[in-house]
Length: 113
Figure 1 (spheres, rainbow, N blue to C red):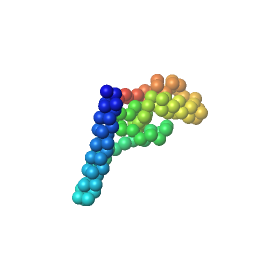
Figure 2: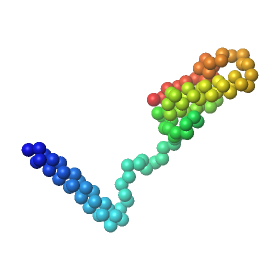
Figure 3: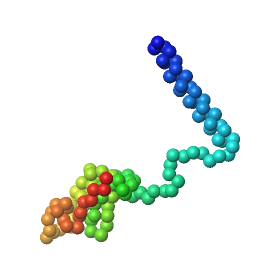
């Protein structure tokens, strides 16, 4: 019984492989456009300033820092950016405001996921 089930599964996989091969040959011979799973229209993406990963703005973790909106791939990259920004501001001299970047009014976190 187990042999029969395995034989049927093998037959299904072989039939699918042959069908795809035949379909590709016919499509290539007819000069048809290859089917693509990628969207026809491009989607604008933004680059994470910490790790360099490109992310969709709709799914990115964002931080509004002054007039600019900065996009991140994860909370970890956002936290690294905050730490790097606070280190730069601390090395430039004492500030009158709070030392923690999340307490600054101009650094507003937005969660768009």
